[in-house]
Image (tube, rainbow, N blue to C red):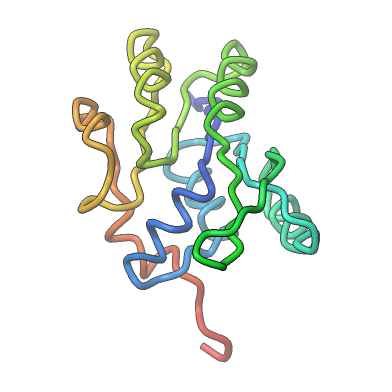
Length: 166
């Protein structure tokens, strides 16, 4: 039986954790991977909105993501402008709004702020997988769900951006 699963992706957490491993996630390939491996029919990508990145957002939508924006704030730390757009509340809210529309959820993050969401999904038998970007660095709060976790560390050959001309 084919499942109707939805993915809820913390884009900043996934992006930064993958980059810390020395590779860049190809979001188009990632969307195909989610469809093929986890039967994800709808993938919600939560991202902080930054003016000037509209072409990137359009490309993500063309690749099959439902992009949910969080307004961002800019502030300076040691003279450097830092943009902050924490998407946690939006991801939790949308996973609950869509709750009756999916068979199972794939939550993509290594952030412990999602402990309560993952715990609830497990108790409701609605968690397909917790997709954690980095085995070596993720929240200890998520370790209790280890039997539900797939780590992305070994996926660089399958999901990394290919250099031009290769």
